[in-house]
Image 1 (spheres, rainbow, N blue to C red):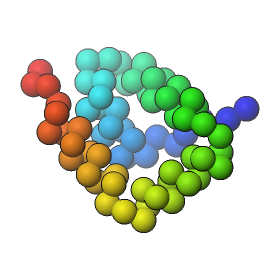
Image 2: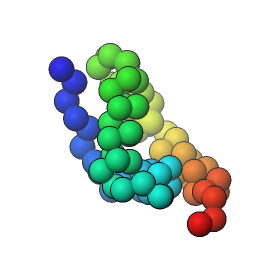
Image 3: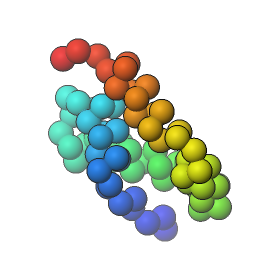
Image 4: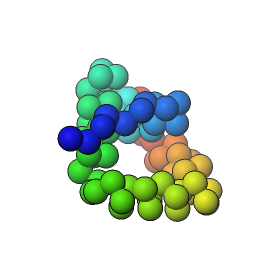
Length: 71
């Protein structure tokens, strides 16, 4: 069984941007589900290495902030 992801401050920011109108536990559950469906551990490790070696995480958060609907 796949371990539940740790909800870091960055992941919480993503949750708030993607699911601002949902209760936090529901938003976290949706993120957990997406992460669980992302693939096998080896694939996830490769994704994490690519993100860690780039500014992709910051770019993603900035893009999500730019697209956030007023509300």
